[in-house]
Image 1 (cartoon, rainbow, N blue to C red):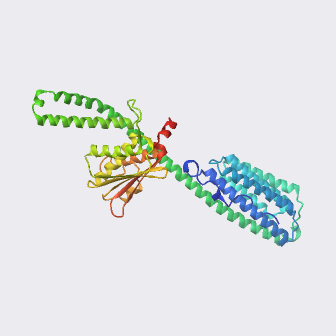
Image 2 (cartoon, one colour):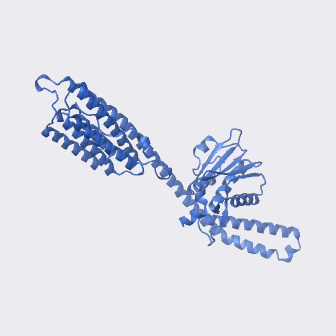
Image 3 (cartoon, one colour):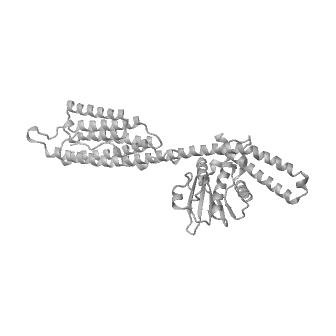
Length: 447
């Protein structure tokens, strides 16, 4: 009696589990990993089966020819392992070719070890099942046709090896044992393989759901940006009018002779200028700049300026600032990044007016900024849905958009924003950004 089943894997860990930029490897690549692993099982199974049949059951087999087929299958699998190690995408055609090689190997082994009378001929069902699970409909039918032709050829061609099957006295015990082993192998391999494929499909579906959620969030951001941009344009004209009127008032005799009124007008002018600055930042964040070039600065200067501007605009001296960045590379100042950090600091100040701390450091190739507070911390439901729009415990309309926009700005820069509660009370929001996304060289290459 003959070989064992062809196909699939044992060392999937040596193949890439992740694709480009650290994203999970595609379903096609994972399926190819399964095929390679199952094929190694087939190689070792065939060697063991050939030896047991030839020496244990004392059935004369063309052992050298059969081992040569096994060696060819092993060589093909090793080349497949090397070829797909650095690939990130597997086509349906590549999977089909792999299965057809397995069918050809099984056909050669069956021909050498009894042909159609070999009980392991039922292993063709395993090939058909794998094709139905892994391939598109047309390719699956190609596998069905190939196995059908192989069985027909084995029936017509005969075999150089005769197995003890006697038509008049029932089936030989060795044939019955082969049938039993074949059934057990097919059942075990199908359960293991299809269970793994089911896991890959579930992982793919979860990834697709995540991408759809991200697309919906980005669409939401676009709408918010359009709304903010429109509002900023509408507010620009009345604010400019107010600024001109207040400037005229300061020169009127009525106001010039009354220091208290003059101070009130100056305060009003300051607030109008602040509103105009906010409108300008909204337009900058929406990409509608006035032709201003990006500002080249250094990491330390950017962080120091960020803290200084926030303290000045919020009139808050309760921000504890610690800069432990060991490096000071040149970067491009990003208005979106500044606004993102302002949102995080504003949220911390709102729940903890007495103390907010900003700690910046460089961890490997990343800039890490921790913003901590002494507030009540995040509710579990908020942490679970961190970064989704309107995810807020403040109970007011539009709440939660600041953190939502901050998460997406960090994601756009290739980083991430995470949050957690501290054991001693309060919360920490951590912004992690790759320094390459902020460096001057990277921006110039992008442009």
